Image (cartoon, rainbow, N blue to C red; front, side, top):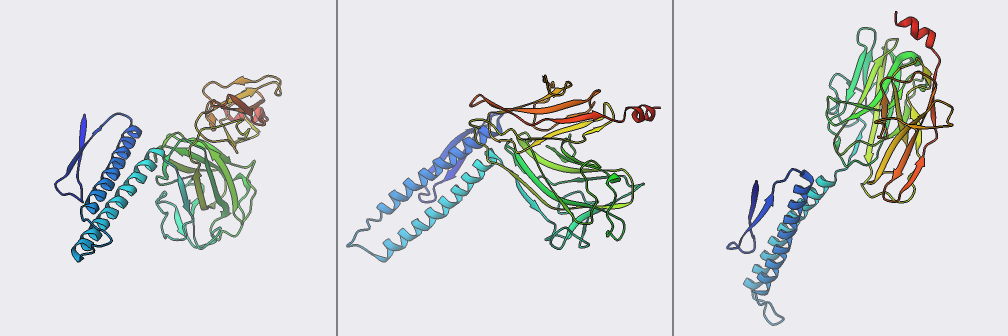
Length: 362
């Protein structure tokens, strides 16, 4: 199917320009075709302006009022049209590249700011500024998924995210909740309903009870396309407020990788527990850009030998079935442009609760 773009040259009303744009399956290519058409418009406008002004026969010896007025009108029309076309060009190129930059601290709004509406905007004990969001999680309200609005269009490069959080006893919020409160999974997806990939987990192994907010930093590499994030909060024990504040999400510009990629630092959702319990692997400090590939590996002999984990080819990966024996994990990053490879330091999971887990299955 072909579409025709028709527009009138503002400097010559008798000159009707027609351009053809093919509608193809790739939205990126269609955007670049439109960007090319806009560039053609710019060139046409410049040429029309040159002809129009030169037609006024302005010289050092001729400055009639009508000549100057017509020239100024031509100049004004030209620059208005040029500015409009330039803005369209920037929008089209930006849309084809994509990139996410998002900040929310809830100070300027009195609602959840486009996030899940069952979370409350509050002025009570925010992390910084004047406001934060919170939800009461307890025995009969054990789930607290906090889903973002559309954050933008991912270009497939590395995303860096930081946020502040705290968990305090209901209702005054002035007493720290014990580390057994439950879990917070930081997840990302391409729709507001998932499916979700876990990039980072907070639980009793890495949460320090406090009435002060803690800052967390993480990185993940989402695929190109729409980007949403979710704080998936699950109840463990207690009756508490879960707070979030100062969410900052930024994505690097997409460029080709070069040289040796960063090794990164591996992360794991838990360092020990039951056999076959779900585990989330991630990494921070990775390189970004086109041409990067990732492969998670595992070792069951203390790192003497390593084997690729089938399908674990993203910077963040969830082992839903966990492991049956003590296992170490590491991430291999490769820049295909240079052929160089680097390996993260390993993280380990130990089976420490086999007896308790066996009893729990009865």
